[in-house]
Structures are given as structure tokens and as C-alpha cells.
Image (cartoon, rainbow, N blue to C red):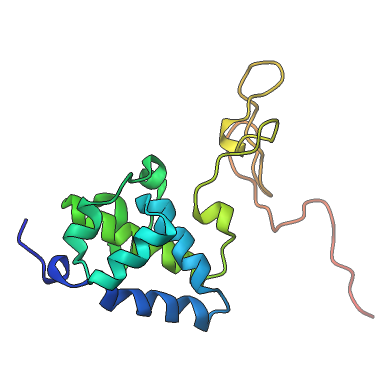
Length: 166
């Protein structure tokens, strides 16, 4: 893939925009920093040094102490591009960071943004739950659905006559 201009842009030039976006929506600089530290593994001091040195995006992600393995759980669309389908690894990391900041600005809870695992003894996500009998539970039927898969005329009441006003 071609060398995109953002790769050589200093991270410190974009960082204030991340903070501004979050603060406009009532979130804090500390939360932005927490997201960046979660994604890259930088500590508070190391992140401040990277900002002070005006490290470019390529170096910022290349020298990241430990990219979080759960970053692959970040999916969705940023600027019309699906994050999980971005081919260039560096551009994908940048898009993941953008997506996380977007989620923060939209008011999502930090534990959900950071893809936190359920607490020990907590309930697993609904998709991971099993039926007590070990079998897959029957699908829930919506209004107008029948067990045989055919639909009924949900809005038509059968056997009831309209009363005439008179």
C-alpha cells in the first residue's frame, strides 16, 4: 500500500483534536490518555515523552511497548471505512484509535470501549450463554410468526366483527 501522509504526521498534532472531540462531549483528557495507553501500552510518562518529541504515527505505533491483543475486537466504521477490513496494518491501528475516540465521544462506558472481559463470576455475553439442557433454545417468535416458519396476517383479527357506531 502507498505511504499515506498521516504516517509521517506527528502524533502530537492530532492528539489535541482527540482531546477536543472528547471534551466537547463532556469527556476528559484523562479518558483519552487511558484509551491511548490501553491500545499502545505506553505509560503516562512515556506517552508524554512521545507527545513532547513530536513522534510521527509510524514511529509512535512501531515503538509502542505492547499493542493490546484485544484491539482486534474493535470493529465498525470510521470515516466511511470499516476498521476490520483496512489492509495496511499501520492504517488499521490509526483507524482503531479513531474508532475508540469516537466511542468515547458518543458517551460509551469506558469498560465497553476498552473491551473489558466480564468480571469473574459475571455473566458472559448473551451470544455465549448456553441453554440449561445443553440444547440450543428455540428462537423467539415475533408478532405474526408461527413455529412452522410461516407468517400469519398479524394485523388482521379473525373472527371479530367491527362494531358499527350507531
